[in-house]
Image (cartoon, rainbow, N blue to C red; front, side, top):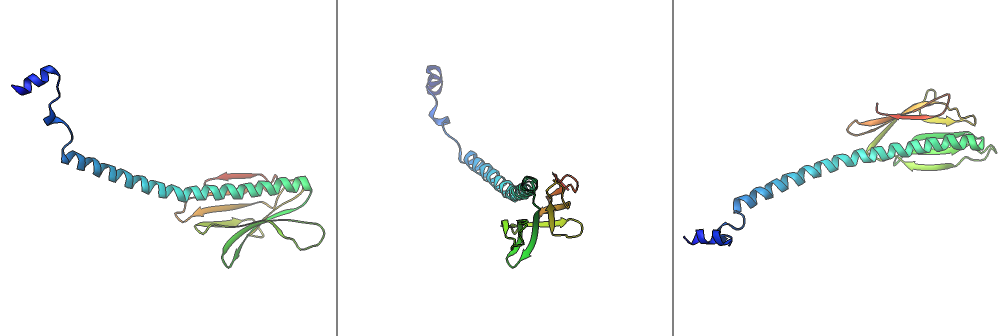
Length: 165
């Protein structure tokens, strides 16, 4: 009878307040599984973010080389070579004075990224000439999982296209 009078008067029944221990455990398990999945997805995305960022960096250097070659009427050369600590990519400009050529840009290739170049005669460089044309070539950039991008440099126009291989 007390239970009925409480409901009639609008007083909540204190015996029904709160959650059971089983409900709390189930919610904690669901939160644990969801956070584990989010962690896995974030770690996968970090590798692809580094790959995209590096591809954009290489593309920007190549576009810069082409535009500077046309503007300054000089030959610019993009080179990827191996050193003791790993691969490096560099950009050189022909000074035209016969002096020692120093790199304008020199950066390391991240360890987790593999770069494969196919530029015809010299497999490690792409040259940009004052008329806007280039020696042409393709640069394939891949991560350890095998996903990657292909940067193609047009021989006639010197322009780039970035695509998935």
